[in-house]
Length: 63
Image (cartoon, rainbow, N blue to C red; front, top):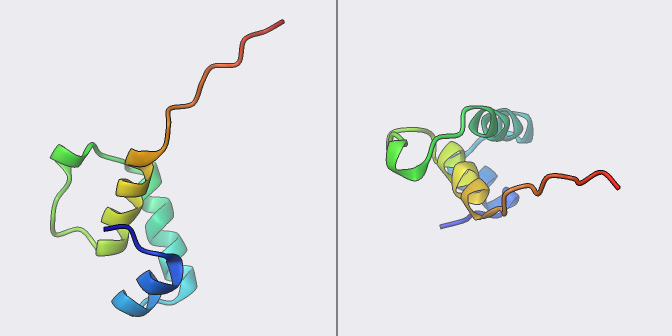
């Protein structure tokens, strides 16, 4: 389940700064779904799920 930022804030009772900190941590410490601890904060899990859905970056080819 993906959460909108405002839903995540109200659902888990964290302020916007704390939410950004959790989401940043999740991106820096990304783990594949099978390696994630289900006890991690729901916002961390949500952000990792969002990252799962992002397409991999394409390398830029020099011209």
